[in-house]
Image (cartoon, rainbow, N blue to C red):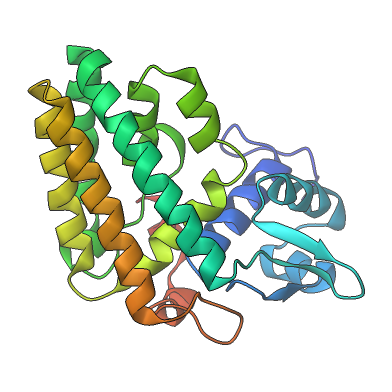
Length: 246
């Protein structure tokens, strides 16, 4: 296949980037896993040119890292570092929810309702096994942060750690009964925003992220090359079209 060929409006590099990013976020390629170009090129059926471009983009998103004398591997946070990030998220995303209640337009709030209705249709969520949110406008937290209409908060929360945190958010959502609870918490946050109750919106968002942090702490580890949250291993068998439609 020529490197410049397109089948869905995206270049080959963009498509291998999307597939590789999904496999990282979903835990098919676990944190700490060493990645070789030869193996990746064979796995995704591409030459090294578009693969290297995809790897560079994923390094810029902090999902991959180059380690001296080791090579490229899936990024891995220490447990204490991830907990620190979640504590900062709790404070800042709580503030974002309060500001969203003050500044989101009726159309933006309606968009949140539509987004959660879309999430509700996901098979994984209906089965209460996982809660996968695509990046950007398809991500509930991303929408709330932008709904704050505060550029400083947006820069802080949708910066270099966004994609890495998104990976851990998904992988630790695979705990039994957590996905449906998370969706219900999202709906209550939207209700508070819609009613203009900034204090309640902030409280509910802080509580939501605190529960996610406690979930991570209760598992006692951050997923690594040989471990990871329960359920991540099963995703390695999931077909690409299943992941793409969520």
